[in-house]
Structures are given as structure tokens and as C-alpha cells.
Image 1 (cartoon, rainbow, N blue to C red):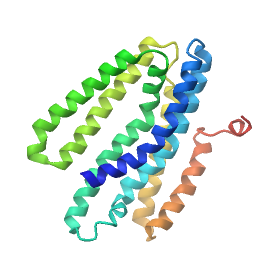
Image 2: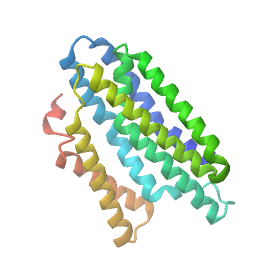
Image 3: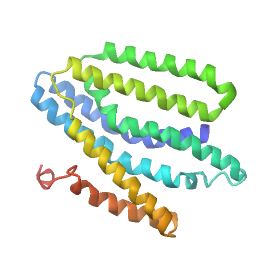
Image 4: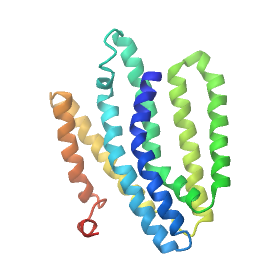
Length: 225
């Protein structure tokens, strides 16, 4: 679990670097709903798009990240890879919804966010106490995912209820579509092509780049801003 979690931390470093930039922008535009909406739409894409590619890579090729565990058995590496994939589903959740936490805290809604985070921590601890003795590291990874899903749902609910900024469901749908098409293409590449992991990853990166304008996530006018 520790080996898998280190890769989670490495991936989330991107979000932890980008989100504070939007925190400052959200705080500056707190009294201007139209500007907040535009910032949210931009932040949603900036945070999510790179992480979608990373998550897809882990889901289909995650085992290659454990190259340094040369003394581990095949079963142990497979167990670590399963934990890694569950943890990176949590990265996927954060790719979609972490920006909403930043929006809330940047516009003086820290208290409800703190309660949500405290609740998710309590839930995680409770699930760990119940499930860890029987299911071990897999339970820990799954508990992290469940807690992340619930707290992210709370963020979206708070934005919809308390903010004057609509939740961009159309943008979330486009991100989900792009991710689904990426995973579909990667599945075909895995089952129909016999490529080395690095060549396959390069091919899927090019494919994903083509999906961005095709799904409307990146448009020509974005390059002029």
C-alpha cells in the first residue's frame, strides 16, 4: 500500500501546484459571479485534463510503475497494482471535483468544507477499523476512494446550494466523455496491438490530444487568450 500511495502523492503534486493559483484568483473575484464562472470553467479543465491521461495510464499500465520492486513476487506486484488502480480512481475523482473545494475555500466557505473533510476522515477511519483486519491494503485503498467520492459530492452540493456560480455539468460531461473514449481506445490498443508500454503510452497520448478538440474541451479561441 505504501508503494502505491507514493505514486498517488506524485500524481497529486500537479493538482496541489495548480489549485493554489486558482485559489488566489477565486478570492480576488469572489464578488463577481461571472468572472468566478469563467475561472471555474478554466480551472476545471486545467486541473482535470492532464490527470485523466495519468489515470488511464495507471488503469492499463500501472504495473510498470513497480519496476523497482524486483525482489517482489508476481502476486505481490499484482496486489500492489490493484491498490494503485483503486487509489488512482480517487485521483480521477479529484481531477473532476477538487477545484470545487478550492472555489469554496477561496470564497469564504471554509467552515462547511472543514466539516466535510472532517466527516470524510472519520468515515475513512471507521471503514479502516472495520475492513482492514479482513481485507488489508485493498480495503485501505477502497476506503480512500469511498471517502473521496463522498466528500467530492459534498463540495458539488455546497457549490450548487450556496454559490452564485452554476455547476458546469456540460463540462463535466465532456471530461467524462473524453476519459471514456481514452479508456476505450487504450483497451483496444491493449487487446489488438502488441506494443511496448512506452510506445503504447505515446500513441494514447497523441490520441487523447486529438480527443480534446473533438469533445470541445479545447477550442480554437482558447489559444488566443
